[in-house]
Image (cartoon, rainbow, N blue to C red):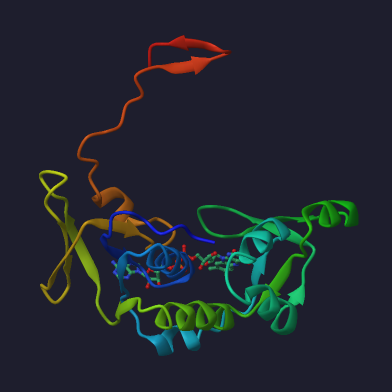
Length: 203
Ligand SMILES: Cc1cc2nc3c(=O)[nH]c(=O)nc-3n(C[C@H](O)[C@H](O)[C@H](O)COP(=O)(O)OP(=O)(O)OC[C@H]3O[C@@H](n4cnc5c(N)ncnc54)[C@H](O)[C@@H]3O)c2cc1C
């Protein structure tokens, strides 16, 4: 259950895959106005040949926060009692971890494997049903962060369109370009850190 936010923001999410759609849904649920910019179109996601999206039990628990998602996993996915481990650089499979029955029972959820396209379609329909706006076939190329917290940021697209928003979320995948582009206006620094119960100066 998402609590409604007191301030209503215009939020731009760059990337319309799993992370982008999940973020968009929860933010819209909190009362913000969300626009997703995605370089591909819907058919690209529906035609994904990549069939084995594995959802470990730890993540399946979180899926319970989304309406009927556990039903979808149970009916359209297959049980998959573990996680695969891959190299960050080239995604080579390096190992597999299979959870014991007791761990699965402690977690209170099963692991699943489901077609990527089915999972994406579910999230997409959920977003559409909650008034998330989509701009497909549009590549975000740059972002201009605001000079102050009172000015909107702007995402520049390949068609030279400028889309303004109060907050820009980088959901553009592995090796995200937007994570690097989004400037931190005033880096947050703690005034003190607590170490072993004692306050210290921040590093
Ligand atoms: C072979 C393979 C197997 C995998 N198996 C699993 C698995 O079993 N379980 C699992 O959890 N994960 C798996 N993954 C990782 C999987 O891809 C991610 O979990 C999931 O797709 C991540 O979603 P994401 O939204 O973070 O990023 P992505 O799926 O990479 O999506 C990024 C999106 O951003 C869009 N985008 C990027 N740049 C821009 C831009 N400048 N402007 C507009 N749009 C942009 C892209 O078009 C894309 O749609 C696998 C990946 C591969 C390649």
